[in-house]
Amino acid sequence: MQGKIVKGIAGFYYVQTAHSGIYECKAKGIFRNRHIKPLVGDNVSIDVIDEENKKGNIKDILTRTNELIRPAVANIDQALVVFAVKSPMPNINLLDRFLVMMEWQDVETIICFNKMDLATEEEMLKLKEIYVNSGYHVMFSSTKDNIGVEHIRRLLEGKTTAFAGPSGVGKSSILNSIIPEAESETGNISEKIGRGKHTTRHSEIFMLNENTFIMDTPGFSSLFTNDFEKEELRICFPEFRDYEGCCRFNGCVHINEPDCSVKEAVQNGKISSSRYENYLLIYDEIKNKKKIW
Image (cartoon, rainbow, N blue to C red):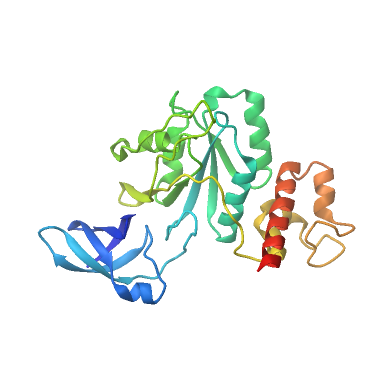
């Protein structure tokens, strides 16, 4: 019997099958021996060991179209990353790190800035300019005023989408607006530290219709970009691509080289200075990590 892993908790995997419902499964030891871990989103084959209580074992993981490290999910078509415009203020460095990871794994990403009811037009325009000019689809929402929810629903249609974002930005509230039966916890922002409580503790898939799936993933507060070489980082910034081959040196990493078209574009305001500054920070982080190892 085949199905899709819709949730994984403490070594148990819940597999949704087409006609027989959800089975609680364990992964066979062969996966541990191969250092393979089943992921939410995996299409799997299972052996049913107890039909009455819906229990089984995962015997095979079918070929993945893709695999994300964080969030740890498989077989997604796109990611929708949610940040708040305010309360908490958006951590642009963290957002750029997430976008780098999605670019590296060739996953199309939509950026949703939530809590627009708390922001001014000027604040929203500034964020929109940075990321639209960087090549991303940017939208704004407010679950409080029910703005943007239908737009999100249209973007999800016919695809498997990973919902991601740091805690406290309203990700679970958006999910509840789209799928009320999801009953995700919604956490209040701690006034003392200005951060959200970690309300989503594991990745879980919800089916909107037979062709549309949403993966709710745990909130994140940091991301590390050590899966590739520092020289490869530039390909994870879409706004640099128009300038590829325009620098004096082939393989220019756009840092210390003279006659660099990317640095010139930053100076001329064609590339966001905040994006470029985060590029430099991430580049140095990868460089220093490689030295340690």
